[in-house]
Length: 413
Image 1: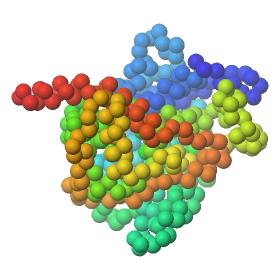
Image 2 (image 1 turned 90 degrees about the vertical axis):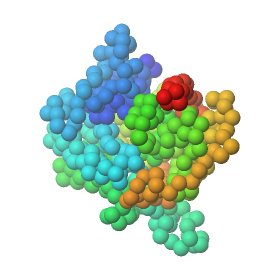
Image 3 (image 1 turned 180 degrees about the vertical axis):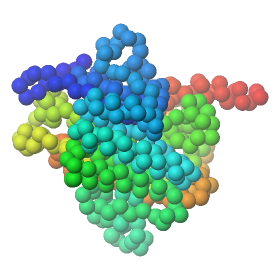
Image 4 (image 1 turned 30 degrees about the vertical axis):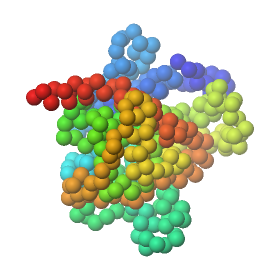
C-alpha cells in the first residue's frame, strides 16, 4: 500500500466508509483505490459484487479485513441505517443512470434517484455522518446557447455553454420529454441535501460527473448484460466494434461532450475524502510543489475544503462531438485489436428510433473547473486517445472471444 501521511509525517487516521453502489463501475474503481492506497475500511453495499470480487477473494488479500460486502437493496432493507451509523462517511453511488431507461422507465428512474436516496440523506443527517453524494452533469440540462439563433456568434461564447456549479441554470425540456426524469430527480435530491446542510448541519459534498469512462463501465449486451439492453455511449460503441457493426450515431452524433478517464476522476474523489496536504505530501507532491504552493497555504487554513461544495468532475480538454468520438474509437480499436476498420464505420439513426418516444438531449456538456481547481488543486491528466486506448484494450481482452463464440453459436442455430 502506498504511504499517505499527514503534515507531521504520521500515517493517515483510518476511517470507515459506507459505500452504497460499491459494486458498480465507479464504486469498483474507488474501492480499488481505497484498498491499495489508504488504510480506510469500506462497508461495500450493493445488490451485486461481480465487479469487486477481485477485492473480496481470496481471504489472504492484504486488505481482506478492511472491506466487507453487504448484499442490500436500499429500497427496502432496514440494515442500511445500521451500516451508516457504523461509518464515519457515507458515499452514495446508487442510481439508475442509463439514458435508454430515462424515457422508457421514468418511474423506476425517479424512484432510484430521488425516493431511494431519501433514507440515505435522512440517516446521515440524523446521525451526524458526512455524505458524499454522486449526482450528474445532466443536472444542467440544456445550455443557454441552445436557445440562441443557430447563426448567433454568441453560441461560440463560453459564457453561454460552459457549465458552472454556482451560476449555471438548470434548463430542462417539457414534461412529456420524459428523458429529463433522471435530471429532475437528481436535481431534487441535490436541493434536499443542500437544505439539510443549511437547516440541520449535514456535512455534504456533491459530485457531478462528466462522462467518466474506463474499464468495467456498464455491460456488453448478450455477454454480461441483457441482449436487448442499451448501455451508455462508450459501451454501445464498444459493442458495435467488437461485433464489427457500424456505430449508430443518434441524430447524427452532433451533441458535444467531454470525457474523463476513471482513474483521473477517482483521484479527485480521494481528495474529497482525505486531507489535501496529506495527499500531496507524496512523491507526486514534490514534483509539482511550485504549481500548488499558493494553494497549499490556502488549504492549511481551510481544512473543510470539500464540505458544503458541489464539484464538477470532468475534463474540458477532451471535448468532442459524439461523431468524433465514434471516429476516434474506430481508429483506436483497430490499433488495439489488429482488425481493419469497416467500410461503413458509422450510420445515422434518429433518437426516436434508438431510444423511443419522449427522448430529448442537451447540445453540450462542458464543465467549468474553477471550483474544484481552487478547493482541491485537482486537474485531470489523461488525453482522450490514451483513455480510449486503455479502455478498448480492456474491452477487447475481456469480451472479444466471448462475442465470437456467441456469434458463431447464433450462426449455427
